[in-house]
Amino acid sequence: MYNILKTWFSSKERKRVEKLSRKADKDTIKFLNRQSVLNIIRKREEISRTDLTNETRLSPTTISAITSDLVKMNLVREIRVGESSGGRPPVIFGINPNAAYCIAIRITPKGALVTIVNTSFKILYRKEIGTPIYNEITLKDTLKASITHALEDFCEDIDLISGIAVSIPGLIDYENSTVIFCSSLHIENFNLQEIINEIMPSNKKAYIFKDADALLLGEYSFDLDAAYKNVIYILIENGVGMSYIHSGKLFKLPQGGFELGHMTIDPTGPLCRCGNKGCLDAMVSEDPAIKRLKELLEEGSISSVKEVKGLRYEDIIELGVQGDQACSTVLQEQFYLLGIGIANIINIFNPQLIILGGAFSHSGDEIVKQMKQIVFSKTLKTFSENTQIYVSRLGRDSSFLGMSKTVFEDSIFKMIKN
Image (cartoon, rainbow, N blue to C red; front, side, top):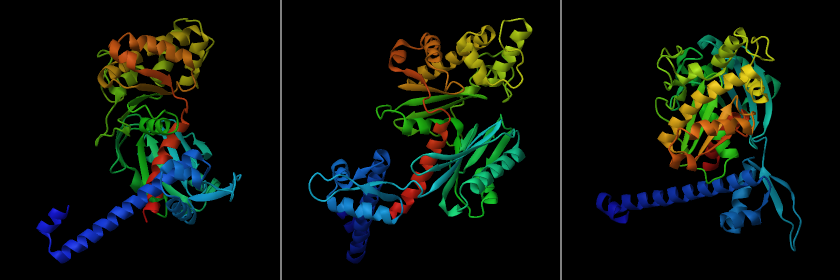
């Protein structure tokens, strides 16, 4: 470093650059130390300065300064005084749960579920907006209704809102907060930030997520062992989505990707919303399942279901697992096709873990057992031995947790940089 400075700068300039460099290094270290302490407090929920010193290996003086700064920033609070083991009783610190909030919204063709999450990652508010979304206008109206309800019902102080996070099916341009294309909602080039600016008077930052990405972020951050570095989430709902964490980081492509639902399974199969035939989306998800069940009922298949109107994918799965003949037939057909898709994914990516989410979230071990039999019969033996499959343990809430974590890391970490 010194040789480079000596070559390119005069003595006076060199000293100035060296001074700035030292300040930058000092500021970076200060930020990283604050970040480390804040993360430990969040994970431990309650912790003393002594335990923070032991975990971070920072000096007691540094820990004392950092905790004091975080308390002044209103991010951390003194919860109580602990028991003394001789000497002064320790002060126990914890995250201030009301330091900030995130409005997190999950969009599907059926409507929206809006939540408010606090900095302790507790979902304090949730409301379902059951208005179908089928174009840009209905999406805008639903977003406006969701945010309005959240603010009026729970948090009128807009300054406490760190950001608005929205998960949505389709191809996502993360850098520009834009939905490039979503066949199920019939929208294209939809800029979320522009819409949020219209709705919110204070120009809050908008964070957009592909639906499967938000779910995987939540599972990975709040439920998985740190040993898992390569994880795939498969969302089975109104369509089939996929997300991928590679080497511990969410793998994002500039123009979207990992559209498992548009993998061709049968070239002569039914027409998909995207315009192609035989996509997984067109054969494995809620609409195809209900359509197939209706056909079986018309053919005289035995079932406790008399009318498919109002039936949900979760209902078919539950009845199928319980032994309903028609629903079981639908499940077996869909499992086989989905199994082919998952086997292809394993053969390409060789992940450590595959999480099945969406309608399967509350289906139990029997679903996993059946799926494993189909999938592992079609994957390379070496890969199947290394890959685990299980059903999501956090369910749809993982979406709100994953989104809010991203929002808080962005907004709060900006605060502790200063």
